[in-house]
Length: 306
Length: 307
Image 1: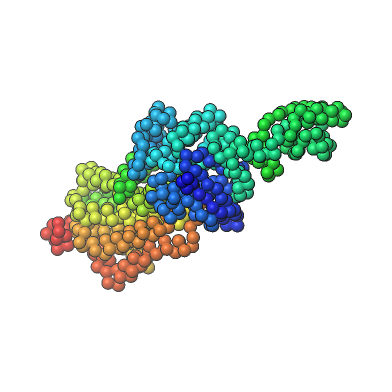
Image 2: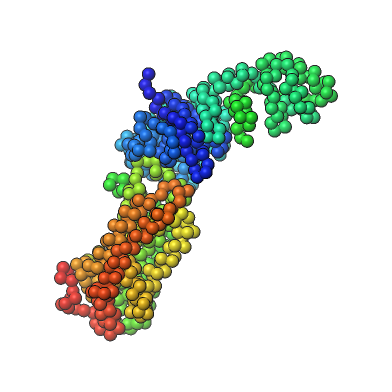
């Protein structure tokens, strides 16, 4: 078996007094779509920027395509493509011109016209960067990340701030990258993005990896329980819901009680009986298989967007 | 080299699409030309077409010195907006980024200078062309030097506001203490001494010598030496201090390095004040201007032998 294309070992990144990344380790295999999932400020961007060669690590080892991003210089840049959290170009640069310009820097390059077609920017070929919408700018950023036909693509929050339709378009592009056997490392704080796109996910919190695995492994490992979200007319007294039959955990979050149950029917029956005896009423009930959000909640006691 | 050339062409393209660039690089210099050569020349040298030629020195110097403003502002803006970060992901080095801004600025300055000469000759009735080889040497060196100085400012400032404040301070000294707006000889003695430590003085003097005394590059030795050494030092230092990231702060050490750009001018300024020929020549040129004598005919000993 070949060595992982991305290897991160005990990575540390410090900004002044703040330790943003605290001994992070993971590996990514060639052709894999790997996600770093975590709330804002968890350290995801710092990790990616070290891998992109934009920042130097303060500790640990990093290797991408067998190269050290800090030392390999221009040779390393030939191998990677990246979309930054926010890409900016000169306002008066035209769309096609930007692709052609960036393609000209590389030894191996794709036809800018093909990329323009593929990313649906043909109509905007001669438009200035300042005239593009947010979605078009992000598609251009993605196209620019692929001008050198890179082995590894880094996508830092590729859909942040975009409307749902543009987000779906970007998902489609990332799925195409997977079918082309590109290695993709993406950061996100959207659960659906990680679940839909990633072969494997590392959940990051406060600069540490708190769980790694496929989305299925992580959710199944979530105590093998089903998530039941209950909203009540009146607040339940402390510990009542936790004591219901089949309930393995209970947390209050945003006015709702999130229960994890190993036996949904028994828990529901017990819940209804309990409410009757308390004179309380059910205002809402939602049953869902565990998601990565539940995994994060279970591991940290907080929601991803908190 | 390839990336430098690619970026140079792109930067020229972008500049030509920018209205502020067109205004500050073409319109403003022409306004100065009409003010100096069209108005002041007629006031101070009435009826003498040599007045236009005498005033062309400061006009050319102000045109070329404009590089100082444009490049520093553009670099800081690109850094603040995160544009430099995107270029950093590509196989492009700091040297190519800096060299391309200097080269594109130079190539864009040349047409303005040509237009200024054509207007001076055909609209404002300038009597003679001056030493065009000397003028070209000063345009080339001056444009590169002042662009490099702008890049030095950009390497130590972090925000647009700071850059503008620093630029204003330096620009005022360049404009008012170099002979570009007021003849050096009418300044108090101590200010005249100070002016020989400014790069702008060598540029203005170089242009005036080429226009008034017909001297060519070989006779502009001190000016060329001062500007060349400054360019080399400024380019190397700005490359070392180059910052791609918007949040990267300039260190005190970096600021001290940036200050070392003035070393050539400290040395050459001191030399000029004690032994310099350039100093004496400018005094002679000023006396010539005051007498409003007809310009030196080409057979005068001050003519550049290469011409």
